[in-house]
Image 1 (cartoon, one colour):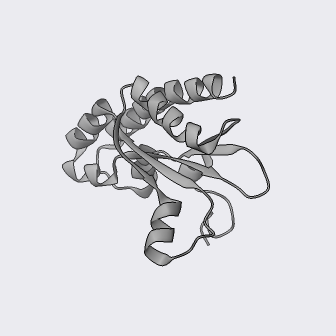
Image 2 (cartoon, one colour):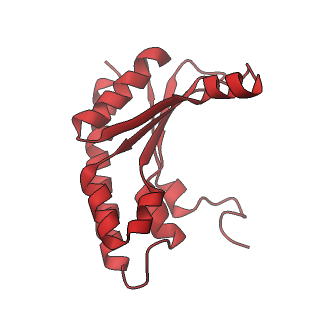
Image 3 (tube, helix red, strand yellow):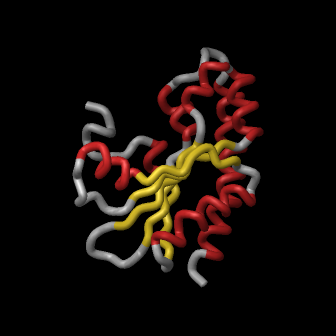
Length: 154
C-alpha cells in the first residue's frame, strides 16, 4: 500500500504552500494575482470555480473558490527544454478559497514542477534538470509567497 493510501501525503502535497489572508474574498483574488505578476508570472486565467459549478450544474452551495492560473517564462522555457511534453503539466495554479466555519480567505499552491518530479513525467536521464527546475520554481514562488504573507495581513 502506497503512502497516499495510508493517509500520508505525497511529497508534492506535503510541500504545498498554504496561508490565510484577513481580507474579503473579492479583494484577495486580485491581490494574489497581482503578487504573482509582480514576480514576473503571467496570468493565464482567473476562474471562479464556484460560479462555474453553479452555472453548469446548478449547485449553489459551493464555497467561493477561485483558480489563479499563472506561468513564469523561465519555468516554461526550462520545462520545454527538458521535454516539450512537460508543458502539459504547466502552468502553475494557486487557489483562493473560503471555508465554512472561519472568516479567513485561504490561499494554496501545489507545485506543478514538483508534480512533474514526483510523478516521473520527465524522460529518463533528466533528473538533474528536473531538480534544477523544481529549485528555480521554489525560489520564484517563495518570492510570491513571502510577499503575499507580508502584504496580506496588514
